[in-house]
Amino acid sequence: MIQLSDEILNKYIDGELEQSVLNEVREQLKNSEEDRRILAALQQVHSELGKLKVYEPRFDFTARVMAHIRKSAVKARKDRYFIFSISTIFILICLALIGYVFVLSVSSGSGGTSTYSIDSYISSLTNFLESFINILSTKNVSIVGSIFSFGIIITGYIFFENLRHTKRKLGKLQ
Amino acid sequence: MKNLTDLEIIESIKKGNHSDYALLVDRYKNKAFSMLKRMLKNEMDAEEVLQDCFLKAFNSLQSFRLEAKFSTWFYRIVYNTALTKISGKKRKIENEMSSIDDHLSLKSDYDFRVTEREDFSKFIHALIEKLPAKFSSVINLFYLENMTCEEISEIMETSVANIKVMLHRSRNTLRDELMKTNYEKELL
Image 1 (spheres, each protein chain N blue to C red):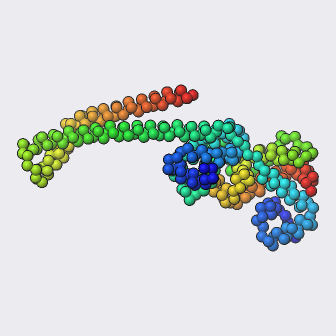
Image 2: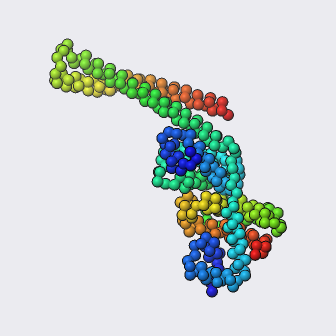
Image 3: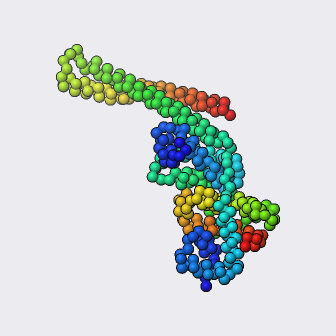
């Protein structure tokens, strides 16, 4: 004779019992009114759980979610523009710096000749590198620092403007 | 459009058709809302968390692997966000949800009279609303979403055996409450 535990009864409901155990359970149910009573209650609970109520959020829920997504997409686009503009400023500053150094090196090394040979290119490159090292030397470091500081100030200004603009927009929404 | 599978919709969204996400929202909002309402016991919180879940899912959609099942992935977000909300509200999660050895005691406020079948149904449903968060999420996923214990264990990041224990314990508790009323005699 098998003892019908809660676990066995639950497995019976879920159809998880092996055939040999299932036969024993059926036999036990035939003989015990108490077990039949417990099983009937469990089956009723199982059946009611199958009719679980589905709740619905407010009717405009989907529209609100999609509005949020659109808003965050616009914000992401703005952020991309912001990063792009900052990067552009830095790249332009660096290019200007390199251009300036290049002009310095060409003007100091050319000596008025107009012939283009591998030697002249190598000497120009050497001059360029020397000028670049010179410009980063202690003598000129203040100039380079000033240029980068100027870039950081511009970046900061754009960043705070962007922040102010976003806050104003959020304020309007609230 | 409504006949598209979840994966087809996701592919379309990944291609840039963001408005197709509304199809997924419409498809999952009711069942996920039911689960959240039963976990959080509060309609406003449930709606707020659900909106948060849909936004999180949208933002993470690019990292979603197409060989995975969207429903499992999405319900994991829902379940974890609900847990965060509960812990944020300083509820005692450990006592309420984490241990399968927890004592599950339910007491319905429903004025139960053994008169009609409808009464019994209302009684049971009133008790279901009172199940602790972890137990109610198992019940919701198993009965509303027709998920297997394996899928639920993936969502709740626990073993299949734990899920089965929680499922059985929920049923047994409801059955015990029912038997206290002697209503089951009417059923035989």
